[in-house]
Amino acid sequence: MNKRALGGRFEELAADHLIKAGLVILERNYRCRIGEIDLIARDEAGTIVFAEVKYRKSASFGQPYEAVDLRKRKTICRVADHYRLCHGGLKGHDFRFDVISILGEELTWFQNAFPYML
Image (spheres, helix red, strand yellow):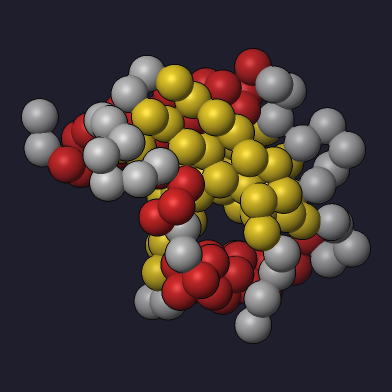
């Protein structure tokens, strides 16, 4: 299985986890010229959730969530800005940035994993 297919499999697993937790998936793999966000969802309170999914087979190179470094966080925030501008109906909605870390078969969901940054 190639990396793209493997990533898609774990993004699907993460999306299923969010759905079971009561979130509604709005977008999968939202792309613009700035970058990409794996999942965009809305929780029961109406908060827009921008989620990055990271998978690693083992922890030999660190935990999956550690790959969401400062540079990646800034990119996610900029893509989120693009999404929010293109979807004007989201004005007034709260939003947050989550990371879904999958190590082997263990999924950990970090809600509000990092703050908005420019």
